[in-house]
Image (cartoon, rainbow, N blue to C red; front, side, top):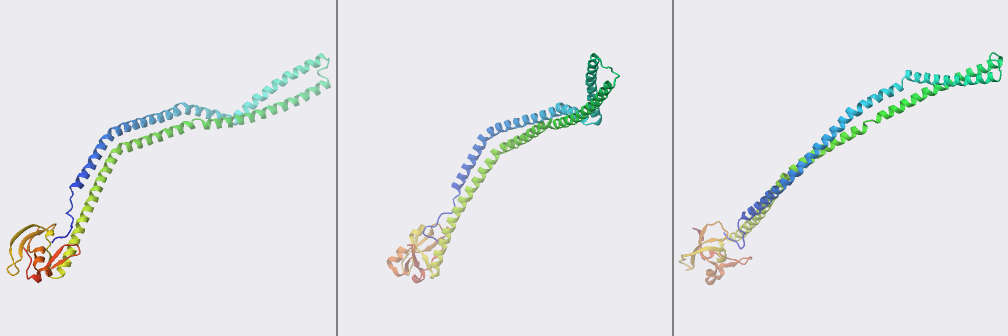
Length: 314
């Protein structure tokens, strides 16, 4: 049966149009973004290849150039730390001290000869002994200094060697990391148009769902309201909505023999499409006003039982 303002069944045509519009925009956006994304993707891949090449160059340079130099310096540094090398330097220092002392001693002897001092005299022998002691002390000091210098120089060279090539290893690692970052960025760039397109599809689906839910909700609410009103009237006993404003496709088919009221076939607006045989409230109100009820929503119902008329489905 009918109601006052029951909404129409859900109309999905507008929803479909909006969804198609969103899909069309997503496709257009995808088509426009894809060439740019390919260009950026190519540039990022080029950057990755360049950084990979740079990293390889750093590695090859470190391995082929600095590593042999480093290995040679390590060997030299290790030689400075050997006992044999320290003794070699100590011997060289002692020999140099001896040569310097010999020159000094020879000059002293010539000076004594010039003064007429006998080289075999006690004074000359004492001077010779004192000189020998000085030579021994000078040689000892020279050897000790040479050993210490050798140790210090060896330590310094080992420290220098440990720093060689360290920067290249870090630069190589950084270049490889940069290449990986460029590769990841290129993948994200390549996927961006597709992700944007998927978001557009999801947005279109959400729009469709929201519209469908809203329309279905309105329709169901109207149907529920209509059912509630009909239930209230039917509960009063053989009383039906008979307001002409609630009906459509109305056709006069005859009159009731007892009351002489016009009988019509009709359908309820927004109803199920079924046709009924009954009266109109405005006709009944003119002859039997007590058999007509005005409902809270302003529409009128007829007490068919009071009229002795039965409303039937055709």
